[in-house]
Image (tube, rainbow, N blue to C red; front, side, top):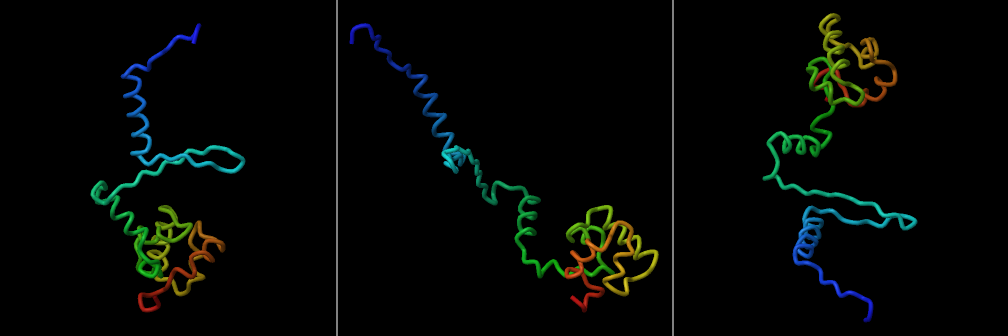
Length: 138
């Protein structure tokens, strides 16, 4: 032991390490070993419904509801907000559908949606199975 100084870890360092260690696991942070020995850090924070705002709870419930409760969407009666539930249809294209319908009257076929500015064959193909012309068709 000659020449080696004995060092005692100060209490405040022990407390700091203990707090850091417990916080690390209390917040759901885990260490995952990936391929080739690479280390990836993953963070998973779980929240309960009591932690969430009403808007967050509503968004989760809407995301988890079955597609049959959303689709088909009637393109002759849906408002712009409902039309935005369709893939590839954002605020501008949804409003374009509403404007087209207002100017030309109800759609007579699903294919007619291609006549709406900004909606081409690709988008029509994506949304065709998800839309209908009247509530009875759905």
